[in-house]
Length: 58
View 1: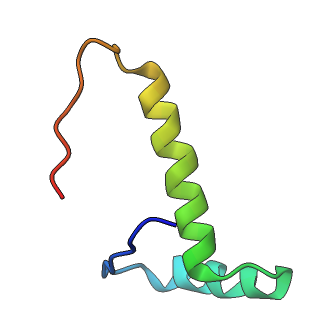
View 2: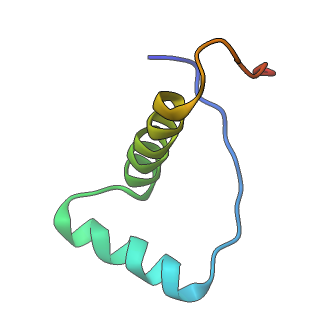
């Protein structure tokens, strides 16, 4: 697995409550957010022109 970094975000209470409710279905908040980000970012990669790549700063 790649090295993980921590990010901190602020959410409206309503979104946090929805994330908390996912725990009853066996999800962790981090796992759900990671999976959602990966899925959405992969959609963007498919739509990008392969000849134009943005630099990624690490």
